[in-house]
Image 1: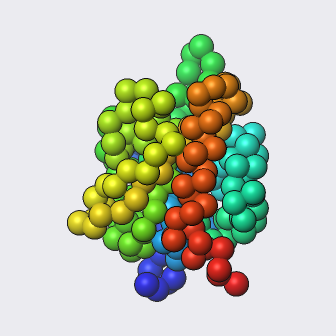
Image 2: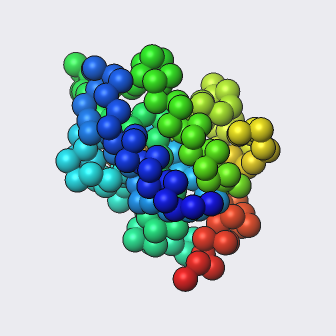
Image 3: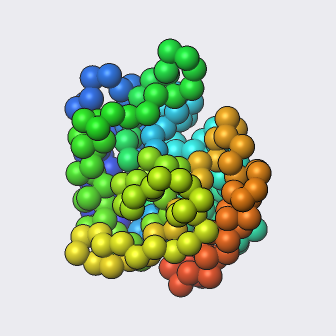
Length: 203
């Protein structure tokens, strides 16, 4: 698959202004042709300014998870395609914390993800956080889905989904049991996956 097509896709995505209540410009990851996709919820206010996904506190935790698997932050950004359910900052909630994108905003952004599935033909999707996970499988409780590999259908192809909790500093889920153990199980599944191994082999 041509890197040029990914570049054109990302250039078009960056010009999107469909959601009036969200703050852009849309954030995209590096132009990477990878069989592994990481999908988060939406960028924060810092990511909009930098601009790159998972560029602040949550990102530091996220990349600490992946470094023991063979990819530090720099290598991860160069070898894994980073996306999100929504690409613009949703804004803050009145009571604090980032607002969760609404259904209309998620629907507006969905075609960008659909095109990425078609362009990349991923073999592994790593969904980070409940909102991202729920785009693929039903999520009542994180304990029911994290620590396992799930087979999903994307672009008429069966691929593997491995969910992770959100690495937000506001959450204690991933540092208390059973979340701590389930996170370790999920990371082990990622490390063993052939698509991840292929990322490690890239020069």
